[in-house]
Each structure stands twice: as C-alpha cells, then as structure tokens.
Amino acid sequence: MDEPKRIKRYRRKGWRMPENTVSITRPGRWGNPFKVGTEHMHNGELKVINGAQSLELHKQWAEAQPPGFFEPLRGKNLACYCDEGKACHGDIILQLANRPREPQPPD
Image 1 (tube, rainbow, N blue to C red):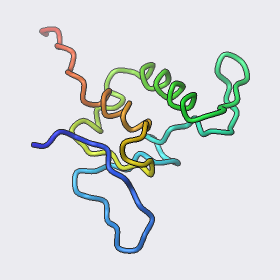
Image 2: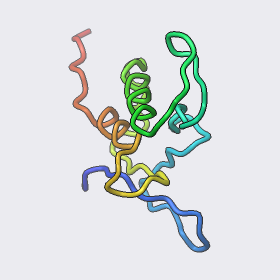
Image 3: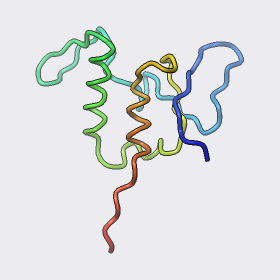
Image 4: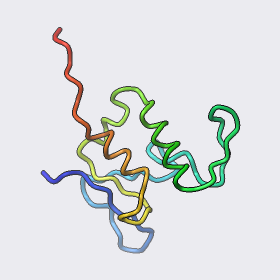
C-alpha cells in the first residue's frame, strides 16, 4: 500500500476526489479552525495574522486532541485546497494520523 499523502483539491467541473481520500477543508471536522484574519480565544484574545501563525495554532490544537482523534484518517490521503509543496495543516494531520500506535497494555 502507498504511503498516505496530501492531495490538491479542486473546485472545477469533472474533478473527482480519488479513492481512499478524505476532505480536510473548512467547514468540517478536519478543517483548520484558525483562519487568517479571524479572532480566537486562545490565552486571551488572539487575531490570526498570517499562515505561519495559523499553522502553529493548528499544530498546538491538533497535538492537544485526545488519543485516537485522528484515527479515522490513518492510511487515508487528505485533500485540501492548499498548493502542493506549501505548508498546510494537512501535513500536520498526516503526521499525527499515521504515527506509530502506542502499545496497548495487556488485559
């Protein structure tokens, strides 16, 4: 099986999401909630001023999610509107969803 990857999603006639691919765009469970130009309550009031800050906030948020939160995305390709080769919250999700599983204690 191929390693999961990020795929460029398009809004154009005839484009279809490939098999084994999940959309991670806004709005939705997997979309980056830290949109540039919006305000969030995060240790007080915060305005997201650029893409780098948006990604850093998303990384902090994603790493704070409970174990198994990204499990439904394990092994899946992730589709986003971000240009390939540019930093994207999908890269963070790919890493977290596909990290080695923690060993389970014996019953």
